[in-house]
Length: 255
Length: 247
Image (cartoon, rainbow over the protein chains, first blue to last red):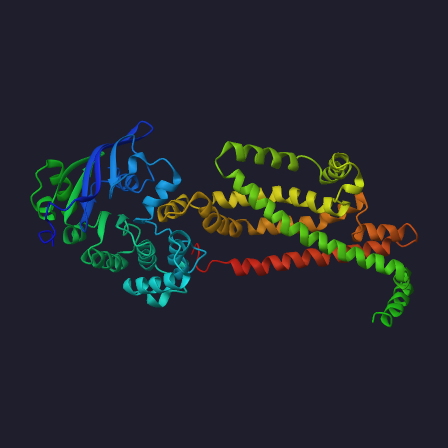
């Protein structure tokens, strides 16, 4: 798959240049450069605390870098100042979290239609029809009336993906979306993401599922200590890493 | 309709030494029943408006904006640290008088003692509701807020669609507690001659030797009202239950 989409001319949908960010004295991002082209799936791998999730939060404006540029589809995220500007950005970016974060007081269907009706101003009927289509896509068509608390982790995560997709995003960010799941439900979530990638959705994933990352990604980015150590095709990173730190990380996982 | 059994009740009570003769006096009976109705009205109006006040103050307290949360905090402290009865006196005898003066005389002042009881109880219990709701809002996981932000919700939409619905659920037992308290506090209206059931009873027992008898009635009225509020509270609690949450 990595070959089919790898034409370098396509402009990047997401571009990070020399992004720096600190939490107090903790220098979390130390000059991140990253590009995600339209239609690509890019996976960020690396040890815990290497700044992977922080990168995602800079892209949708949950965090603002101290230095550097974050540009998403022409929008300079680093220089957005008002809430309205950030909302306009976030409408275009889906975000799926490790802990699903569904609204526990709303049914599955209500969870999915809340943002499209309130924020995009969709008619309830339209929103519900689209929500049901999305539920069918994530293979939960019969769960529309269930509450999040009645679903397994894997099912909740698939609802969370449907909720993100209901906003018709240009890009979906996945932040360790299988890390909180039982091993047997990881597969059902990954197959939904795999389908999205095949459909051409631009996806940026932070993941510890190396086999999955290798299989679906067009590009792998390895981060450590707030820096991007190496990036390349899955084949290069997993089978012929040039950097010794990448090599050590991949090897440690193999054993 | 009640005429047939009332004399029988009064006679039966008399045989055990209780004097409920006032029930046979149409004027006193009507005044007392009016008192019960007024108590119910004050309770209902107070509960609804105190909840609205509570949500507004809780929103201010958790807004993170000093020009909102500082006045809200000062208000809550003022309310909690002064007696309710003193607040009612202060509202009716001081604030009401100032309003009357500003309007050029009491005849131009639309606010009655009845209105002041509703206002003071709403603000007083609103402050207590606000603290319960603040606890509820702060119990909403940060990640939940982050996911709403990521969907594109504004600060206000997150409050109305995510934080308050969850906060009301988390705070509900405390809110019901406050509402039960509010029902009992309507009796303070008697201090400024609002004809609720305590005042109506007082007006009857000053004319007769029936304090004990009216006390028993008062007890039953407040018990019925507070049990009703607690019962409705449980019904609402079941309606608000989030299936599977926290399991």
